[in-house]
Length: 264
Image (cartoon, rainbow, N blue to C red):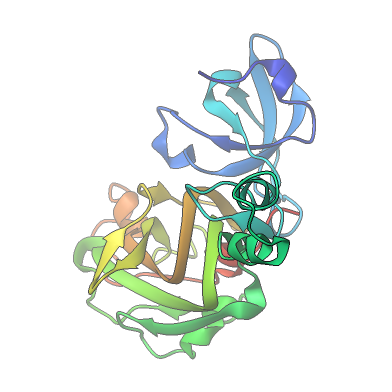
């Protein structure tokens, strides 16, 4: 069940859900105005990165979910908070010494990922224009592009792999692309993968970039991991096949620093 308009005041951060135009689903935005007929004005993006650069769009309240701001230290998924752990194990619970209860509670907390903790450690392939570390800077004259021929017809399974200083919580993703007509190679469809034993498994639903040049921001199901793959499966040329037939057999992007920033 979606929120009421009263639950979405101006300034509230929201994610988009259950839209028939699937390319908008999972994008982050900020409420800028209540509108008539159960709709709300939302500026997309500009939540975890630079100020939004595009005009507001109108969405039904039922297609918005409010996103809370997260502290830097969080309870591990499927656990209880540190205060509850200390009460359970300390004087009013099992009677363990306070320092023991505090120590146990610390093992049930995890930090939100910070940009300085991230390295790009690999990729499926790359054309070699720049080091793959360029994916973490904020320059638009550097990029990552997969090797030629890796995405026949504009579709494939090309990835960038990231590793963190320790196991961390990742709740948001952000990436920047050159829009059409400048960016036929730009990633249009992608998902995130995490390690599971010897394998990598899909950790998010498929997501889509929009044909725009700002840092595009996405809400994720909360992930706890020390490494992560951004799997790119379709480029903009393939997504616009009717307009761009037989073009672009690789895939790429400008940057993904938004992957690791938290809500401002």
